[in-house]
Length: 159
Ligand SMILES: [Zn+2]
Ligand SMILES: [Zn+2]
Image (cartoon, rainbow, N blue to C red; front, side, top):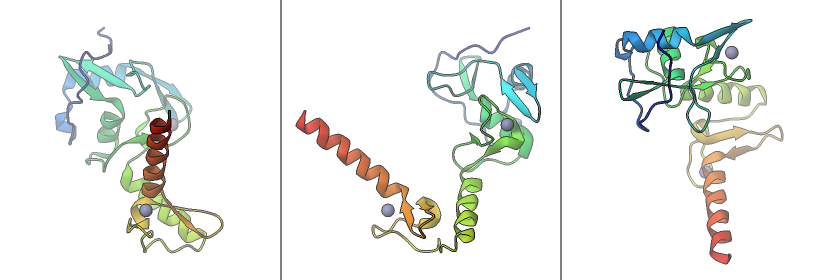
């Protein structure tokens, strides 16, 4: 049996459809799943940040993206993340893409009675960057990230 080893490249091979997944890589994927209740725990390699990866033929493959494509068959929007909270789970049904997370935020906001159609004061659409708060306000993650970067830069300038 071949094992899924840590890849020796930093670049991911782009995968847009099921057909983009080499057969060997699909088998490596299936060989490194541990079934636990409704979840599939990845037992193969991870990169330095803990993201499940498969290194094969001098290329690097995203395990979450492979799992998504095998489960849903369509290209994910943006980053695929595991949303079930089970550590290491890469089960297709447990994954979300940016589109899913966007829809979830809007639904969550609707439950709180918050309108997500507007923008923040800097013009970032709430539908893309807004995070509804229980106090009825919408926090803008784009502005939050920019502020955090500035604080860090200011701290560096002082030091
Ligand atoms: Zn799961
Ligand atoms: Zn903003």
